[in-house]
Amino acid sequence: MKFSVLTGNHNTHNGIADTVIFLRNALRDCGQDSQINVSISADRVNVMMEHFPEPAHLEAIEKGYRMGARYVVIGTEPIVGGVFNGGVVSNHWHYSNVEYWRKRTEGFLQAARYCEAVWVLAESMIEGYRALLPDKPVLFLPHGHVEGFRRFEHLPDHAKDIDFYGSGSLTDYRQGIVAALEKRGHRVRFDQPGYADYLRFENLSRSKVCLNLRLSPNNAIPSVSRMHFNIEHANFVAHEEYELKCPLDPYVLHLPADEFVDWAEAALDQPDKRRLAEGILERFRSEMPMSRLLPPILDASLSHLA
Image 1 (tube, one colour):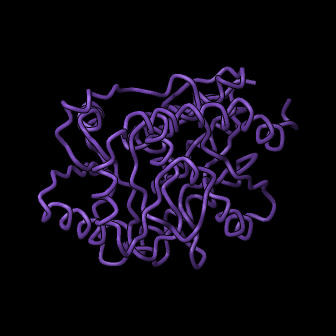
Image 2 (cartoon, rainbow, N blue to C red; image 1 turned 45 degrees about the horizontal axis):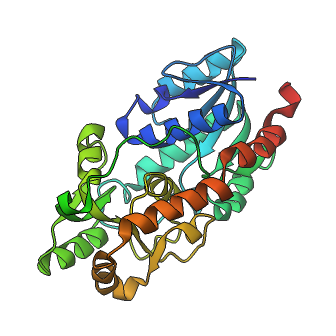
């Protein structure tokens, strides 16, 4: 079967790069013909992450469907109170924009009408999506190991000059942790969405400990894409504990939220971080290959198209 990982509905924004490459390589690891494309491919199954805030995006989906394109859409956001991200973060220009998330949810539901299946990135999200889409297969897509994903190499430990590295939206909650670490004299780098990949990779190569932080105390679901990226690149990860668990939990260092800064400092002092991180990657590669995890999902989603 032929696949296209579609980026046009995100206007090819750099922020989706990690997931796009993960999807393409996962399909290739399963022996599928897989490409990344900006435009809809009429002769392929188009795998796309939800994001349809503009009428033109939905018009393109409908037009492509009439021309023979088929779709799988990936739900990336938790559904709270019937909408994406309801109440997860307050006082943030993006996550607390109620009208934006309402429109984005409506756009997703319109696009889903044309899809063969919906994949979600956390098992806890299945119930919410099935409630909105009772006539569609809703399946959990795990993040396992894919070949060819690694895109930078670490500097030797003696050359690393960034103590802690984080990325994502810098909410008030995350800013508080960054400030606490900086107050203790640590050099912290936190890259926000849209930062150029070549700069992000440069910072990562120079970093001793990578941070996985909640958006807010109300954020119960971890960012599996960030966890996956860190594991695949053998980054030594200090992961703030989340309420809900995920299959990647065994491959990161969990730190309690109420003592995170203290424990993060202890992680920084760990003398064999590189060896530990590389060992975790080897175990991940052996235990969770997408070549084994993805085929049952493809069968359950698309066997009727074969």
